[in-house]
Image 1 (tube, helix red, strand yellow):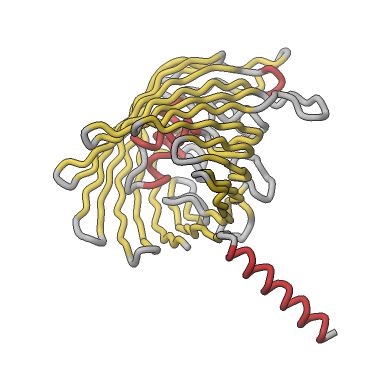
Image 2: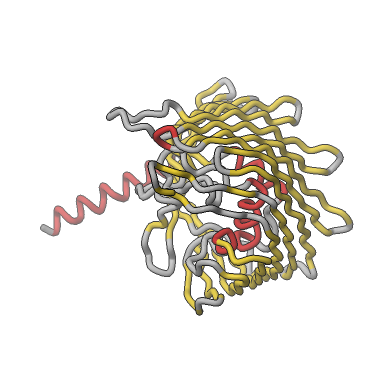
Length: 356
């Protein structure tokens, strides 16, 4: 028995050494916080300021400037130890599971990936206030479109899905301009189940110190359900040490039409302490989705405003503490973002995040 255990330990050591030799890396973020809103006080262990994740990534030099890369990434709830389902994608690697081949000029990626539409939108949204600020702001700017294709468990009135399965993505870098196209391959499973449609595209660049992004998304729910499209533009820049950011979105679908925008800034008080503010306003109007004689999804109105202020204190290069407060002009599920508090008008969050 001892010999067997020693042999297994040796095999595991050799395997892990070989993996590291091939450039495989383990990475992640642990983010846990205490929230308080009108429903009470509770603890959350995922996505409060930064997303709580655990993953593996690795690459191989193929020669002639080409590289192959893989990514396996899952969401983790650090308050319970459970996997974070990320909108219903309850698989082991529920965020990313993909392989990419490319060079400095172009890349093709296949598998489950983050939405390029969301990535481009983050250019004008992400700041010190973190997820507490930009997740509800993203919902307002984009009207909640996205999330139905691929069975992610979200409808067209909820916060956009960040990750989609069955994606093919191609990107090119042309003199500092990155152009990306992304689409869901097929709308049916091998068993003939309709899983919806999804496609997006983005253009990002930097002009005169201003980081700019423009993107679009087209989405249709499973089984030929609601469909629509949204267009967004955003950017960020630094002026006298202050980071300014903003985004605007406009679109329509079978369920809604309207627009939204977000503005914010981040100001470093010292090398360790920074303050941030996010304001968002939306005027998206929705109608019920009717299935047969009953409404399957109730009427949903995204009109309203959001104010979020936050402070971030760096304890080291890998660890920081944060405090955020968000208020909303109306009680709507869009207010809660990732939080289980339901329809609330204000949320206070105190937490700590560590990356590894």
